[in-house]
Length: 131
Image (cartoon, rainbow, N blue to C red; front, top):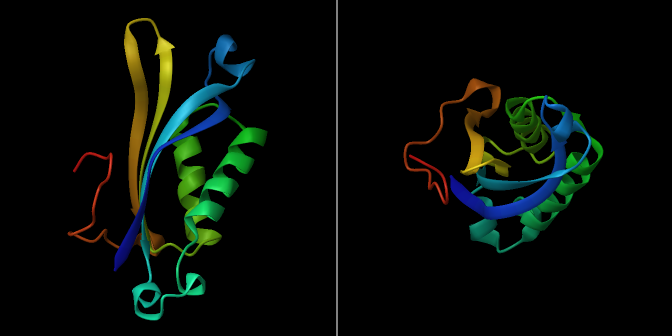
């Protein structure tokens, strides 16, 4: 399996349970790594892979119009989007709220999932993500 990574993607979304978080958008930073078919490299054809520009566009579009209470729920939403719309076989995602609290740079979650419960590959790269 080959992998695409998107590192330090900044998006705006409304996420949180506190009143201050529910009234205004926050900047989130996303790091994603997801599996793609090996056929892309073999055929040199965008139709054989996942177009990262479309992934970024869809994430920005969806997060811009939704409200989430928990960052965990927001993360699961992104994972499902990659599984269902883009057919990614495996996703690793880190989401961080930036500057959400005094003297804290970031607060966030890590999620790793294989589609239909598949185990993640052992050799998967983790650009911007912990191992």
